[in-house]
Length: 294
Image 1 (cartoon, one colour):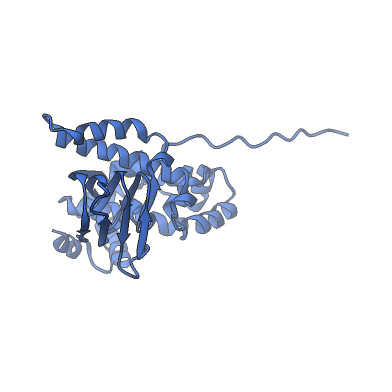
Image 2 (cartoon, one colour):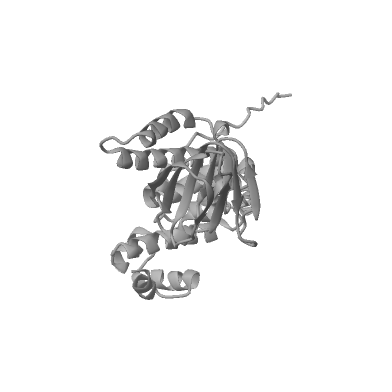
């Protein structure tokens, strides 16, 4: 009689879950306010624009319109960040004597509504500053730059806001439940095996990704991979890959790239194949979309 020793499966290797996304869809921030806010301040929704507010001290009541996906009223009583990844009207109410202190920036997630991170996040992320590990150093530098005017302060503050935002995104991927993220990309990236396949698609969108190959990349059976992917991400692997490719194509066409070269890079056999997939996903041809996007 032979005895078999069961060896536990090796854990999946650690992968960089953000860099490929941010290389393709860049994040830009622009400081527009530092210091106290008193009374009522409102922030309008503009296409392609989000907001990142840092409440350093004081209290705050935030108001949103009903049906926006964010609470109609929200009270904040400790130093916190408020991140709006998509355009959303909001209004701050600060007690006149509260001396609430803010640093606020606009946020542009390249690709607008096609940006996969913007689509994966809830309408509003609110977190105490102390809850997001790793922020202390960047916040210290950021507040030092916003407290007094020095050469290059605005440019440096913009870059530091981007650092804060990347650290926030890193934390959200590691804590999707605390962030209130729905089923989608963040939940998929939080899964150690699904992340292997998602990062592979992000890094090589033009590769011939079959279900079997993606499952092998994730270290899972085809059935387990397909079911887990659908439960976590909310769509099939093939549908996610199609959306990822079309999002990249839209960004490249917006930047003036020609359709034939974009098609080749993204795994389409011809410009006409890209055009058919583009129309199926976005309801118009690449040429029509590029004209409307400019």
